Image (cartoon, rainbow, N blue to C red):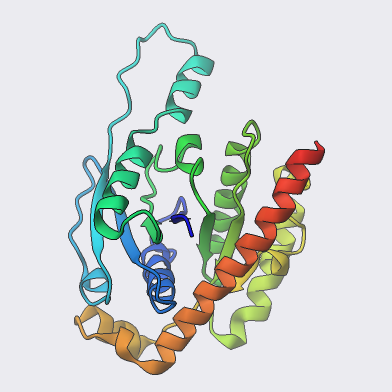
Length: 260
């Protein structure tokens, strides 16, 4: 099996992106596949390996997003956008890092930063799936829909479409409200109504494990929460759901591209 790259993205910090990436990586690791978690860093945004990565039972690395090219000021906006979209420096470095760490066959989960240029068409080129986490607040749902719309727009001129999966994060009692908010917002986002993403959120969303306050506190304190059997089982189920939905959507998207 070839390498699979999962890009976990979102424009908004604090939406659970890093934790979602960690749980996805843990779940993939538990399927006995070589797995690597990579946190994308950026200039002027400094980070260190946090307890999330420090306690995971798999390799975790950081990779810097290169600064944008210093383009001539008289370049047209269209040409500049094309250059930025084709910038493959990060994706090329990611491939080299992954092959060095886990070989040619395995899973790579990338915790993308929320800076401009964190995700471009070149990064999507080799991706297996895009995962967009969302919590239950209306503001987080709005940002998740905006992020999914951006991913969709990036692929409008591509000959290959990558499945986008919404990872919903909420306690059981809030899940119904979260899905209603998603459904209402999708209804008003016209860019998502071109056949590549369904109107009904349940068709391209999966439940991510929800961690209670005690578990989050243990994680922040550096305790190995990933050894908990219940959490391990939920992470594995989450990863299986993401892969299953991505495979099904990938086949449907390929049929759509072939028929268009």
